[in-house]
Image (cartoon, rainbow, N blue to C red):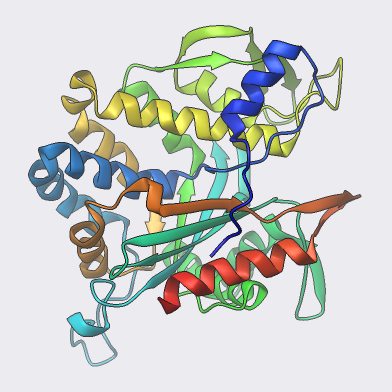
Length: 354
């Protein structure tokens, strides 16, 4: 497992930053954001809150919609995973990808890349995030971590694959790459569209967030227009997405690092969770799940997704270790720290071997 060295959470560091008014303090990411992880955690938390039956019923159709797994073999027979080999009995590993697709902007680059491992016997888990700019050399090609999935997807389409098949092939190739990088077999991949995150916040009526600094950034190329002032306020979907995406200021290009942005992602996901388990959020569960199904895709069979829900519905989030692969910026890449890489490899392997 990870070392027991005390670490400040992103929220504590941002609070400290506001108090001291130092604009260059870096925050370490403890609980990273991804819409796909949000999808799973929403089910888990709502079930734990005592309304799991409704979520399960509503989620049954949703699960079928987000799974793009092939469910029949060449003979037409249904593919089924035996219970004793399923996520209900065996540890599961997943690649979690957040795609920055927004209306009129973004593309297929995976601006969030995480690997997760969960163990049904110990009810423990680990989620490891990495910088999107992490340098990876694979099959003789060196690219940033966020470029591989997009390249695999485009290559599949050039070979004649339709959208769904291209997603399957890109996920399969990405699992192999990141599995080799972390020395761990990756069974499934989940991709999530950031536009869906914005929609979920709007369905909830916004979330209350304490904006830690003045955020101003425009980019005519992709239509970005971030304009937030410090202070406690209710953010709608667009502003919440701006809050978690903000990295720099034209007045001070170093005003906000990737580490600080990831800490803000933690703040927002907690705000969403608090809203979801509130009385107001409970009344909107169906709408939120509907929004999620439009933007999340996985190669995990729907049967396995259902088993995950029933297996992990009561997991304690304190038993999930969230950490980040550390590295140093050497333009144009972030080069992974070897000792940090060794630690996260050990963490992931410890979860699936317990």
